[in-house]
Length: 275
Image 1 (cartoon, rainbow, N blue to C red):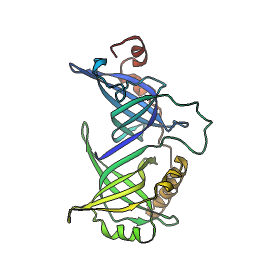
Image 2 (image 1 turned 180 degrees about the horizontal axis):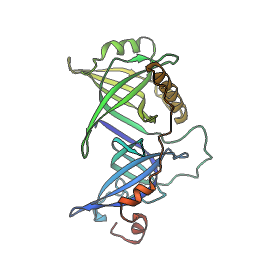
Image 3 (image 1 turned 180 degrees about the vertical axis):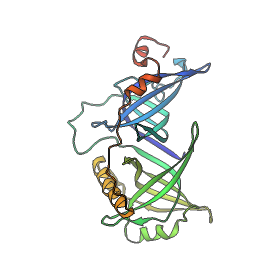
Image 4 (image 1 turned 120 degrees about the horizontal axis):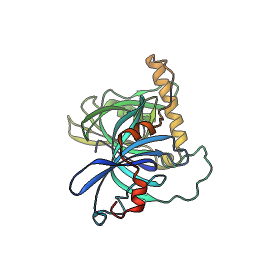
């Protein structure tokens, strides 16, 4: 499980994949998140049995347009129109009904929560003008083809905990386990970490070096976390000499989507008991 994510999405587009075998088919969909804003997109593939009796309705709900689903699965980078977004091979899909939505506010619900495993590429560094630290890890996965991609892990440095972690991990040797919230900022992946563990492959000893208080994490809204990451990203870019303008990673997929996929599944699902 190099990178596993879960969140709640609203289905924007849904199609049945043309490829089938004897007992299964797959559904391709675009979902938007987070709830209340729905400005980011995730590309999803959901493999399910053709026979409804063979499905688990609690974990294999078939997507329908404009409906909400709690999803979880492995993710790798994707892109559209020059912007990065995530691609998920969906392991669990549960149809949900949300209470009447409140007006959009500064606190957005259902951020993209992730757990991932990677190899640190350098020791953690403190970011100037912030109370945070950052280091890069390389994450590897295989779905349809090998993927190796970089994620920047951000966490507050607190007294001796940061110093210990900074001197303990071994770049290119240790294995890092991270739990946190993922954001795509200026086409780069950032995770605001809630918990970090590592295994020193040289010593084969598992250590738990940093964990933020759970109450502190739950009090951070999505907007607050993203604002912190945006500020850190700007400082990282400034320190590295990158003065490029920041731009949104959101995109629309309708023309591309319509050109390569079959008719919308939503009506088929409503009118047929086979799907």
